[in-house]
Image (tube, rainbow, N blue to C red; front, side, top):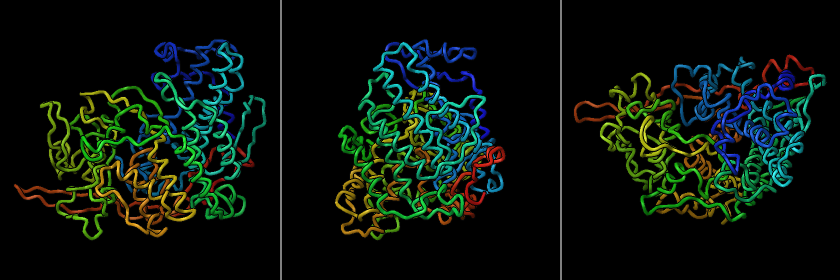
Length: 581
């Protein structure tokens, strides 16, 4: 395998983080200082406690690259997953190199060696090898035995996290275990089956459940017991889902690589139990505040670094990172990503009813009135208010067609009539105001509740426990009433849960993109027109019309899986490519 060969020869260059994660209890600022260790060997690094910590920090740093598929938070990799779903799209002059444009146009069907696939594959295996180097050497360090034991569990969690990203993109992958390959080794590794890969990741996370239940503030960003159990919940939910649970498109040699060969409903039970284990810890809760304003707790969760809802975050430094990328040009942002009308239509009314439901109160000409409060905390629409640096007050954001600066059709702005504001602080713009210290949210309690509701509903139908899990989220959102209709069927509850996942978790860790794939709904949901809203103004007259800005083309089952980089296949006699590639 080429990339494992490549990884064997890596030096320690680039393993240090700058402000990526708080990882030292006594002097975190000195710990995060950049130091050139390019010429240091393993013996030197692991003989020094500070360098040992820094080596592990470098592995944390790589998480950001997996979070957005590409090789980091720069180079055009931002939000590539989400913008390849039916929720949003991306605008940027360099976007043609990203996953989203290639996926949406189906051009990557003939590009099994597409650079973004290679970046992701290499980033994951690079860091898996780093973990193995760490585990093989950390006992040589002067760090205390108790601290080393915890650091080993952290490293194993990080390794499981990298395998998780490989699993959901490629299905079964080569599982290396603890081995550190030397330059003389023969490492023609075959792929492990999907089941073997899942079992390995789950077993590692079970071991990582011995991590501390909580961390000190200076250690925030390190995994805990809840993070291990939460990631296990995500892995088992994926494994129970239609794409992998006996319904994968693989044939012959890659049938058991692409998923389980048999359908087993009990896999939903395992997923439900994993989510329930997090819930039963009793330390996580939804951030609630419907007194300040309906759904205000949802907003507070999005701008606060450490809350009882956050289970694991990929850390970043305190800055205006979200504001700089998401907000409109008039607010100092770059307007890189924008929601679709399909996503907007998903938000119910504040009375909890779907916009097409009788009695909802929805009016097409006044479509932004009386919507789910989460809509207002997630999306900027024509007429939204946002802080203006010139006046230091909130003023209208004009996204109507050809509005100066930010309008639909103007250079560098939205092409759907919408922009995101999720995770943006209302007291900031892209280059002014409050610095936001939220990280990249990877696991939070609301997702665990929805994982539990989905898995339990699929296993045994809409029980009281399913209702309670979903209604907690709707109540926090500020819906009145938040209760669901009684006696929903399993199929009806399935649609409720899927809609809640889309609304509650929009633009988080590309959950929607992977949900669509694991449910095997991509041919329906991302294979056709993607729509926006064009508002036009003539004097005091405002008119709106839906319009198609792009045709999405999920045209082949092969697109459910990313291809293993062709360069890897070419260099191996045992590595089997994914179905259709």
